[in-house]
Length: 477
Image (cartoon, rainbow, N blue to C red; front, side, top):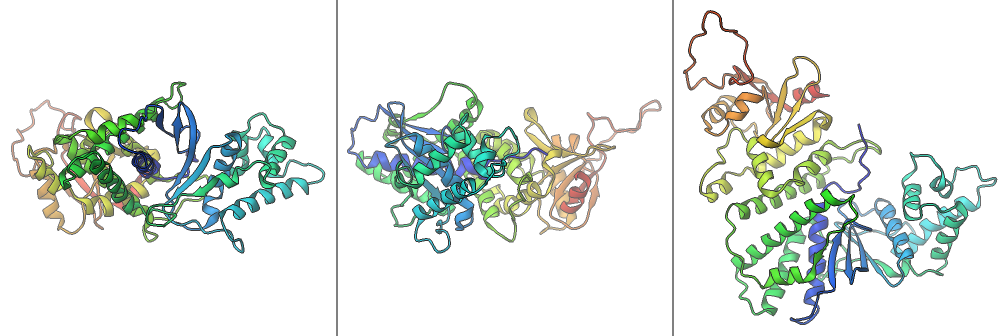
């Protein structure tokens, strides 16, 4: 399995919202009518996001959604942004976190904790005699591809530097000859906290939108606030997806502050299907956040081990809201989600099934067996050994009897694609249950004398099985 070194499991969801919130606070800090034509928001370039003025960085930001206050969890990110600030004089740096960052044991604050990290690297190199390549600084300049994280950060920040040069850079920061550490701090929110819980960021964004609307003399009704909020979610979502597609290209895409201001001044009309899709994607991402934050459900994988949930989430949350909704419908063969009236679709959405069944499946099942059909909006798993059966992750809970689940599936008028393609539906029950998807139709014609009795792939499958998660996990690992 490939190892993904990205530090956050739902980065672009929380990260994008924090970036939007920060940009809104800057806009609200100036009078209405301020010319922001030279300001822009850039995500995932030098850091998680940065504020640009005339194309140059004014501030750089790290965003970390860890369910931990331990300093060690954030030390690599703090080293990375410190080195970036070394290269950019007069630029400030902020780290935004879900939980408060504690300082290192016996140290008073974040500044001294970072300095202590640098001292460890400096002392390690200084005391390695003869230089045998064992120190982090020496490993940073080595040709070894499997570098420790700190060595990789140093290499990425200063490619081509010698070990002596890296030592001098770190030493200048440690001794204060370069003021990088003084320009770095954890972000202080309006409530006095230096952290922002996942469930609070939405309300903070809405608060800033409300301030902006009132400043622009726009009546801030609950409906207008929600519509503007969802418009911004859509804006950030489209930008992030496009940013991922063009990240390797030289052309950099940013969000102009004037574009944000213009969005605040518009009276957003009801966006119908898209409104539902944006809200659904927001809720879907939140369920992943909640699952990850629950220590009874999730434990962080060991180093160099791929996280199935993270990889699946990366794929699903990188879809547009409308496409994600279409994939979700395929995860719900027991629910009719094709109503013309969006309120019916919204009420039929099963957040509990997402939180306690689908996400658990995505977490436990080997992502290396994942297969997706973009044209049919189908994400499933496929066994690598004969008979190469397919398994569909679902939101089906075990609260109903299997016979009731069977009836819901066979009576759903919009589940036909599943009945053609997937032999196994993964659900939260403990027992396998096989049924005939055409049992309620009784329309099969008898076989002709010369007809092949085997099921064709363009026929409805003769049998479908509700499969427990443990059974699917064993079959696909």
